[in-house]
Length: 400
Image (cartoon, rainbow, N blue to C red; front, side, top):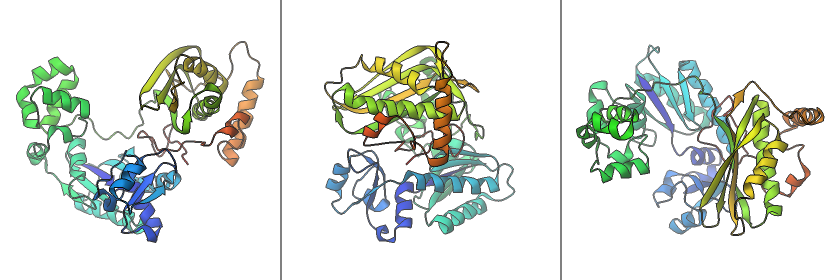
């Protein structure tokens, strides 16, 4: 018995609950005042066609009365953590899938799923004034799909014997885990429904998709292999990206933002005692085209100055004269329980400097002390909540 809790228009609902003047009005939460997109739209705004990912100007065109609210990520992560802690009072088998979504395994809970759903909905409504939709089924796929039925503030329970009929009610493109590319590939094969997928056959799916073919065939039958994962999987990389407040055309202006991102990556690596050897840098130009390149470092490191030095070398291979809109840095090939802040050619002063910076920033907040050139940046810190965000562990990023 698996339950999926999906918050309804989470960011926008939190803003409406905390500001009575926004209630009942079309609201779009945006990332920043300039050069940003809609992160969540209220249900009032969705009636006009406002969607996540569209520019604020497009949202304003579709809904001239829309109220744009700059997101308060700390508020959203705070609410998410409080909900997570409450779910743990029901069962320890909780997987926080994202900031606004969670799975529960109710196998050890001696209550009907309707009663559990009532408890959760009541807590969230009374504590925060927002709603959630809940789906229940015999596996994560069915529970996830059921949570989207009867939104907002919905509840849907699918008995195991109804799995196949339930999954057949969705087009293949709407099945959880089937992205645009895969859906397009299926369409090119004449597969538009889960029944078409079953008729295609497991052997053909395995021949085309390898081991993943077994999973796809199981999903077409309303089954799912993976259970609720209560243990955080080992993190393979640590990364941050930032949409710049203006287009940048030269390295002198880009360097402070690149250094800031390298420091953010390094700080998380230092805090979580990991080091990496694979560096990846990505930029997005003014035509929204992305270019990325990776580089294997000659040694493992957690240090900002190492990451920054090699990131600059990677950037030199890009043509930034057309303008850079976004830049991102990630450190991969990680080893855990190892903090490497100097190589064999450097003395211990670098390590002492990092320890002093971390001590001050832990007490007074990130970037309380940092590199002087970062002061030139018009944006500082993590401004978006990653899809991989978790309430604790290495994926728990402090966002502004």
